Image (cartoon, rainbow, N blue to C red):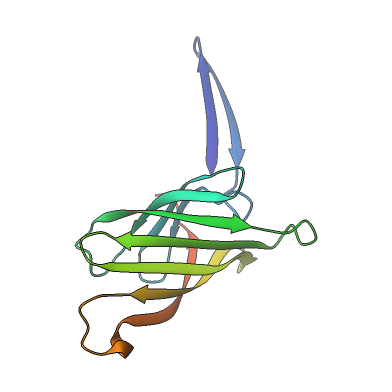
Length: 139
């Protein structure tokens, strides 16, 4: 749940919006426990945020950037793409997918490509897989 709080001389006004495909801002978690943290979706669709991988990066958090897009003809279909440069590791991952409401809640379904350095064979350089991100439950 997202709250807009305005405080002025002791007056607090709260407005609640559910985190969903139209309100992507917040924390999303995939099946491996990695966190997609969307800090802002700008008016033109640019995403600003962070990514905390649960594997291979010693708990470090990395900046991410990306885009959301949808058409006037299909306004409920939200497409998303974002990427992370794993600074210090020589790798880049990009995710592309879409947001939908499924199993009673919003999900971001993606295909990702990880390109990495230091591999002996070309076929080891790029790994492709998929991830589904769901809304991080408040504790």
